[in-house]
Length: 402
Ligand SMILES: [Zn+2]
Image 1 (spheres, rainbow, N blue to C red):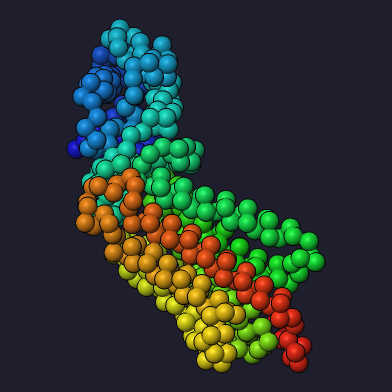
Image 2: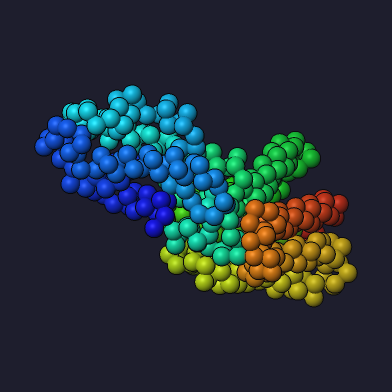
């Protein structure tokens, strides 16, 4: 068993969890001892310190996680360990009985600080099962980091999730900028109702990208936090698809109240259905990767029905020029390509271990989703411009009320 797994066992063990960095403390009764040489566990503590030094000298072969409590260098050890604890551990003279609790607390604090400051990326096979998602990514994984502070600090380090976090974080910031610009235009330029319709789209995009980067940031916190955020991530995708439908249906069926209402209701029902499926506990498991891609692809592709409806009733030429069908098709192609990369895990499938940090399928999927969102924004902007040039509906005044 590696040092890392050993440390994980201790963290999982409620008996030992209060002295996370000190192994095999079970049965240690500080009241019974006066000389440290008689203290069960002391030798193990010394062993641990010696192990740590020897781990440092072995160097990093890029395989396997070091013990999370392993100090990066002796300076760190010196500054984190108090003189009392060092004296207690390194000499056989001192009475540890009176210092036992203090030492345990110091050790726990020490482990926590070192953990946050100096974890190292590890190999896929050293991850706990709940973090093992894509076995084509070999090295560079974050170990479990049971601290939100450590998770958020990891945004600025290089590991398998760095690209995933930053792609959607930057996408989120970009769309916050676009939304702020759009929604602060004077009402003579863009009317309130227009702004409301675009807000549905902006909200979907921003929530989706925000949830996604949050998920990739805290995924390694713990099994329960990882599961919760993966559900929020999937809910974000459903909201992105729902939000994308709203402006397209609004402008596409601007003067046809009934089809607009029916399609919007169907989209909301499908969105709620995919959120419900996303909340299923086992939905995030690796074996359901294709199901996940299928659910969201099916939801997105349901947009083909109103698009064909529009093209048949208005003519294909009008559909291309007025309803920006070309942009809609490009958006669909980008989403489908993204979902295929995601489900098939290309290119890392063909180059296992070569796409650990950059150019893995999930990053490509993220980038394609951002591109699709921008294409959609362009498409619905064109539709809004067209509506402005054509003016309100001729006879059906009721239609503009939704
Ligand atoms: Zn993602």
